[in-house]
Length: 289
Image (cartoon, rainbow, N blue to C red):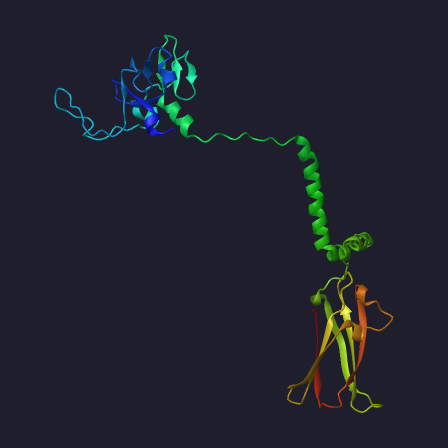
């Protein structure tokens, strides 16, 4: 509603200005009670205009209230305008006639309460809280637990199968449905080279024969590592370096996908063509890509 359509009345007791409607003033022929000082007055006779005035009327003493500043409507709580310890509750027996702005008391007067008017005009409407049925929790919580367990089993399937071999069959079946594999663990710290040797093949000039023993000290199978062989000269400078994948050193009778069995040894034998190099020593190491 625009400012020109709004009507205002002033309490003669405390000079508080209230916004009113014709319906409120018509309840008891304009008799209202101030929500601040509880003064009963004629709201129609005390109506004022907040529109700017070009010519101000002075009272008998020459005081011009308009020239001393424009009238304003205070939107603060009425409790802040009362002395400390004063009871601010609405009198017993009042009934609301206009939501948030006026009420009719037992003696028939209309009470204008600025605190209620402010709360109803400027407060955001409280949203209705939605309650979740217990059945949703009864179904949702177990389902969530199952999903969490399934996700953990997917990410740690290799470790689970290594620690509990009896689960490998079930995990392999589930992986077959989602397109994953159950593979041996990769723990390079549990592998060691127990012995190694590099010799020239007397039957073939320039051909070297490398042999080594790889031991798995873990109580479960481990994936085959990469073997890196480095040939050095008399100054221990690198002459050539070569990495061998499991498919290049695992013999045909072993299953590379099953890994090196727990607490077992693997014999490695490689034939290396070194006819284009001159070497005096070697180094062997293992790693996982």
